[in-house]
Every structure is written in C-alpha cells, then in structure tokens.
Length: 288
Image (cartoon, rainbow, N blue to C red; front, side):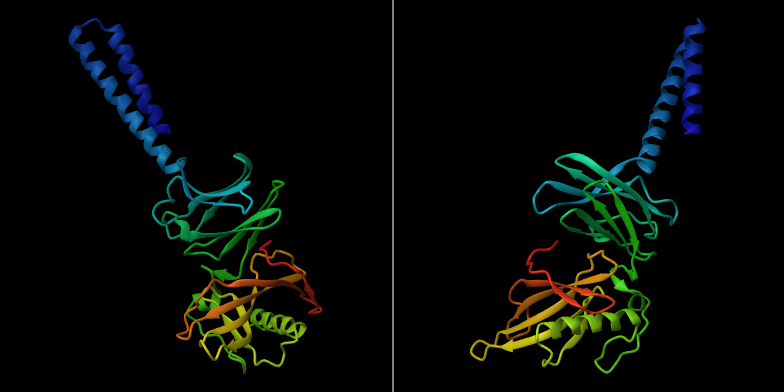
C-alpha cells in the first residue's frame, strides 16, 4: 500500500510539473512519465487486491428446502511461502447474508478446493467441516439465527490422528482400536444393537475410509439372487450435543460380487446417552 501511495505521489508530481513547466519537450516527457507511474500504480493495486482481498467462491451448497445457501470462499492468496490460506463461510437466506465466519487454514501454502470441506444441513443450522494439510479438522456450525460455533475435531483430513500419522493402533479381540474414543463408540453401537434385539448376531466393528466408526449388525443373503442385505449402525459426526451421540441405522444392498448395488437407505436414527447408554428411538428417516 505504501509503495502504491509513493508511486501515485510521483505521478502527481509529474502532472504538476507538466502543468507548471511551459517548455513543450519537458511537458511531453513529464506527461508520459506520469502515465507510466499511474499504470504502475494500477498494476500494483490490482496485484495487492488479488493477494489480499479478492474473494474466490470455492464451493456452495444449498439446504434441502432451497431457502439457505452456504458458501465456502478463499480470501486473497495464501501467505508466502508456505503460510496460512485465508477463508470464510457465508450463510445466506434467500440471497440475504445471515452470518459470516472468517478463519485461516494451514494448507501448506496451497489454494483451496472443494476437497477442503464437507457441508451438511440440520433443522436450524449448517455445518462445515474444514480440512487442511497441516492441521486438525475444524467444524463450524452456523445457526440460522446468526450464531457460530467452532469445534476442533480429533481427526486429521477426515481421518483419526493415529491413522493420519501412519501409526498402527492396538486392537482388541474384535479387531477394533483400543483407544478410548473407539471403545466408547463400540459400547454405544452395541447398546443400539441390543435395543433393536439384534444382539445374537456376531457384530462386526469397522471404520470408514475417513475414520468414522460403524458396525454391521445384521446380514441376510438371498439364496436365489445372491444379493446380500446388511444393516449398519453409523455414527452421525454432525450431531453436536455433548451429552448424547447420534447413530444412523442404514440398510445396504450388495451384489454377489460384493459391489454395493443401491444407495444406502436410512431406516432410523437413535440417540445414545453417553453416560448411561440409554437408547432413544427418534423415529426419523431424514438427516437433521
């Protein structure tokens, strides 16, 4: 900014000299010099704008009812040489800005892309999980009333910290990590299966590619077609209540070759009290 002001001052001095000095040759020289300095100032201003202020829409998602939009934007360029990338989330309602959330992402000095976030919608808020190459994941809950909640997650780029650091966690007798968080998920998923009366099935505890826990609690095979139907209990990572966790019961269909033959079908949602393991049936088949 100081450089641009100096250049504009020099241009103004050249213009003043062009007016005050009456010699034709000097006037032409100063006029040309003034135009050159003005062009330099414009180029510098454009560069400064692109580096610090330019807003780039990275991605946008719309709420299921079409009333709200959540924009993921990059502000300017990443700090040189390998500094933070400046970003913001903008929640809009029918084109009107409800709230704006500014933050930095440690992304190894790289520009952002759609892979740097995931967005979901609730009844009264939008949630965005932000991924960076050099930071833990963060979740921002933007409520429709304008309030913002920031949460630091125990995942890195969508995966648990041990997996992201190529560490091999210790496993229990069911092949599940012995870390406290996964053993907690295991007890809660077992409580849901018991609530459903499916405790006789030899449950299979698994982890998704992004490190989210889930369990296979039922499996049936169609002898005629070879198609396999499984019921999965999956942790809803977007649930933000601290005293309860929410699990989704989904039906999955697999062809004989093991490929999933249809989109997963939501069967129900269940709340599990983190202290007592009491299960509450929410009687819902919609994300909320």
